[in-house]
Structures are given as structure tokens and as C-alpha cells.
Length: 107
Image (cartoon, rainbow, N blue to C red):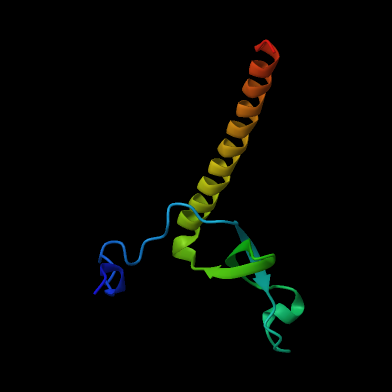
């Protein structure tokens, strides 16, 4: 039997934790329930409700974020944005250094 075929239960302390980085952004939405005698029919909408939006396979995805997790999920999304930005600037620096080396290198 191969070790990867064995179903390992998740570690108890990591079972309910979020990954350190998540794609997307957390957005606030206000909802209208559709009942004719509700306060939202007069314009006072229900909410705020928080959702995380991200793109996956060319499609826009959305998932509900509970109020108790909003700050944590938003921080994870921000961490991913900062990482991607650092990677982008790293590649730009690499290209600039490569161009400088090519110009300085005699042929």
C-alpha cells in the first residue's frame, strides 16, 4: 500500500483554519428578501452580508464569509495580492538587470 493512498485525517488544530493566502476580495452586499411587507420593500435592505469573489477557470466565483471570519479572510486575500505584486516587481527587476547585463557584455 502506498502512503498517499492512506486517508489521513486532518490535524485537529489545522482542520478549521484558513490557508495563509486566498485569491479574490471580500465585498459587502445588502440584500432584498422579496417579501411585500418587509422593511426591505421600503428601501431598508438586509445586511451587510460579506462575500469573497475570485476568478477560477475564467468564471467569477462567490462564497459567503461569516461575520466572525471577515477580517481573517480579508487579510488572507490581501496577503495574496501583496505576494503577487512582489512577484511582478521581482520579474521587472530581473528584466531590467538582464537588459543592463546584455548592454554591458561585449559581443
